[in-house]
Length: 146
Image 1 (cartoon, rainbow, N blue to C red):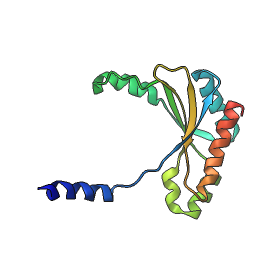
Image 2: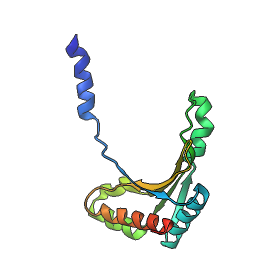
Image 3: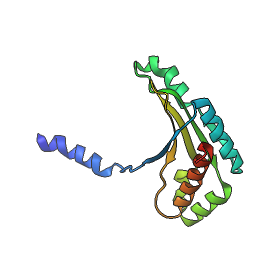
Image 4: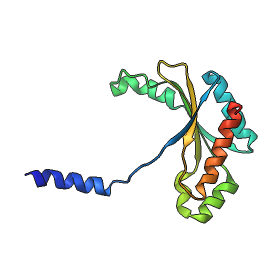
Protein backbone atom coordinates (compact mmCIF):
# COMPACT_ATOMS: atom_id res chain seq x y z
CA UNK A 1 0.00 0.00 0.00
CA UNK A 2 2.77 2.42 0.95
CA UNK A 3 4.56 1.90 -2.37
CA UNK A 4 1.36 2.53 -4.34
CA UNK A 5 1.00 5.91 -2.64
CA UNK A 6 4.64 6.97 -2.56
CA UNK A 7 5.72 5.88 -6.07
CA UNK A 8 3.42 8.31 -7.94
CA UNK A 9 4.45 11.13 -5.63
CA UNK A 10 8.16 10.45 -6.19
CA UNK A 11 7.65 10.22 -9.95
CA UNK A 12 5.90 13.60 -9.92
CA UNK A 13 8.65 15.21 -7.88
CA UNK A 14 11.41 13.83 -10.09
CA UNK A 15 9.65 14.97 -13.30
CA UNK A 16 8.73 18.43 -11.99
CA UNK A 17 10.99 21.31 -12.95
CA UNK A 18 13.04 22.93 -10.22
CA UNK A 19 12.47 26.68 -10.10
CA UNK A 20 15.31 28.58 -8.51
CA UNK A 21 13.94 31.97 -9.45
CA UNK A 22 14.98 34.74 -7.17
CA UNK A 23 13.91 38.34 -7.24
CA UNK A 24 16.32 41.24 -7.01
CA UNK A 25 14.54 43.97 -5.11
CA UNK A 26 15.03 47.54 -3.98
CA UNK A 27 12.99 49.65 -1.56
CA UNK A 28 11.71 52.89 -3.01
CA UNK A 29 11.96 56.10 -0.98
CA UNK A 30 8.76 57.32 -2.70
CA UNK A 31 5.10 56.37 -2.61
CA UNK A 32 3.64 53.90 -5.10
CA UNK A 33 2.41 56.38 -7.72
CA UNK A 34 5.67 58.33 -7.80
CA UNK A 35 7.65 55.11 -8.00
CA UNK A 36 5.52 53.83 -10.89
CA UNK A 37 6.09 57.12 -12.73
CA UNK A 38 9.84 56.87 -12.12
CA UNK A 39 10.03 53.27 -13.34
CA UNK A 40 7.99 54.04 -16.46
CA UNK A 41 10.20 57.05 -17.17
CA UNK A 42 13.41 55.06 -16.65
CA UNK A 43 12.25 52.34 -19.08
CA UNK A 44 11.38 54.94 -21.71
CA UNK A 45 14.61 56.89 -21.05
CA UNK A 46 16.51 53.66 -21.80
CA UNK A 47 14.99 53.80 -25.30
CA UNK A 48 12.59 50.93 -24.66
CA UNK A 49 8.86 50.62 -25.25
CA UNK A 50 6.54 49.26 -22.59
CA UNK A 51 4.50 46.53 -24.28
CA UNK A 52 2.17 45.88 -21.37
CA UNK A 53 1.44 47.21 -17.94
CA UNK A 54 -0.18 44.49 -15.88
CA UNK A 55 -2.22 45.86 -12.98
CA UNK A 56 -1.78 42.66 -11.00
CA UNK A 57 -2.73 44.17 -7.64
CA UNK A 58 -6.02 45.52 -9.02
CA UNK A 59 -6.87 42.17 -10.61
CA UNK A 60 -6.17 40.21 -7.44
CA UNK A 61 -8.20 42.62 -5.33
CA UNK A 62 -11.08 42.66 -7.81
CA UNK A 63 -11.22 38.85 -7.88
CA UNK A 64 -10.58 38.33 -4.16
CA UNK A 65 -14.26 37.88 -3.21
CA UNK A 66 -14.84 35.44 -6.08
CA UNK A 67 -11.92 33.29 -4.92
CA UNK A 68 -13.26 33.21 -1.37
CA UNK A 69 -10.18 34.88 0.10
CA UNK A 70 -10.14 37.61 2.69
CA UNK A 71 -6.38 38.25 2.29
CA UNK A 72 -5.40 41.59 0.78
CA UNK A 73 -2.11 40.76 -0.93
CA UNK A 74 -1.27 44.19 -2.31
CA UNK A 75 -2.23 47.77 -1.72
CA UNK A 76 -0.84 48.27 -5.23
CA UNK A 77 1.10 46.13 -7.69
CA UNK A 78 2.00 46.72 -11.32
CA UNK A 79 4.30 44.82 -13.67
CA UNK A 80 5.89 46.46 -16.71
CA UNK A 81 6.77 44.22 -19.67
CA UNK A 82 9.16 45.35 -22.38
CA UNK A 83 11.94 44.12 -24.63
CA UNK A 84 15.19 45.32 -26.11
CA UNK A 85 15.46 44.19 -29.74
CA UNK A 86 19.25 44.40 -29.70
CA UNK A 87 19.77 42.59 -26.41
CA UNK A 88 17.03 40.05 -27.06
CA UNK A 89 18.57 39.13 -30.40
CA UNK A 90 21.99 38.75 -28.75
CA UNK A 91 20.78 36.48 -25.95
CA UNK A 92 18.63 34.36 -28.26
CA UNK A 93 21.43 33.98 -30.80
CA UNK A 94 23.52 32.65 -27.90
CA UNK A 95 20.73 30.24 -26.88
CA UNK A 96 17.40 30.18 -28.66
CA UNK A 97 15.73 28.98 -25.43
CA UNK A 98 16.41 32.36 -23.83
CA UNK A 99 13.05 33.20 -25.35
CA UNK A 100 11.56 32.04 -22.04
CA UNK A 101 12.88 35.23 -20.41
CA UNK A 102 11.30 37.61 -22.93
CA UNK A 103 9.63 40.01 -22.45
CA UNK A 104 11.59 41.41 -19.54
CA UNK A 105 9.62 42.57 -16.52
CA UNK A 106 10.02 45.02 -13.67
CA UNK A 107 7.47 45.05 -10.86
CA UNK A 108 6.45 47.76 -8.43
CA UNK A 109 4.50 46.54 -5.41
CA UNK A 110 3.17 47.68 -2.08
CA UNK A 111 2.18 44.79 0.14
CA UNK A 112 -1.20 44.85 1.86
CA UNK A 113 -1.08 46.89 5.08
CA UNK A 114 2.35 48.34 4.29
CA UNK A 115 3.60 51.76 3.20
CA UNK A 116 6.82 50.27 1.82
CA UNK A 117 7.14 50.18 -1.97
CA UNK A 118 9.34 47.49 -3.51
CA UNK A 119 10.73 47.53 -7.05
CA UNK A 120 12.34 44.46 -8.54
CA UNK A 121 12.81 41.90 -11.25
CA UNK A 122 13.63 38.24 -11.70
CA UNK A 123 17.30 37.27 -11.38
CA UNK A 124 18.58 35.93 -14.68
CA UNK A 125 20.61 32.74 -15.16
CA UNK A 126 24.37 32.75 -15.55
CA UNK A 127 25.87 33.54 -18.91
CA UNK A 128 24.64 35.97 -21.51
CA UNK A 129 21.35 36.57 -19.64
CA UNK A 130 23.32 38.45 -16.98
CA UNK A 131 23.44 41.28 -19.54
CA UNK A 132 19.65 41.47 -19.35
CA UNK A 133 19.88 41.46 -15.57
CA UNK A 134 22.35 44.37 -15.77
CA UNK A 135 19.90 46.26 -18.01
CA UNK A 136 17.04 45.70 -15.56
CA UNK A 137 19.22 46.63 -12.61
CA UNK A 138 20.32 49.83 -14.33
CA UNK A 139 16.74 50.81 -15.11
CA UNK A 140 15.62 50.24 -11.52
CA UNK A 141 18.60 52.09 -10.07
CA UNK A 142 17.95 54.99 -12.45
CA UNK A 143 14.28 55.05 -11.41
CA UNK A 144 15.19 55.11 -7.73
CA UNK A 145 18.05 57.56 -8.08
CA UNK A 146 20.66 55.05 -6.88
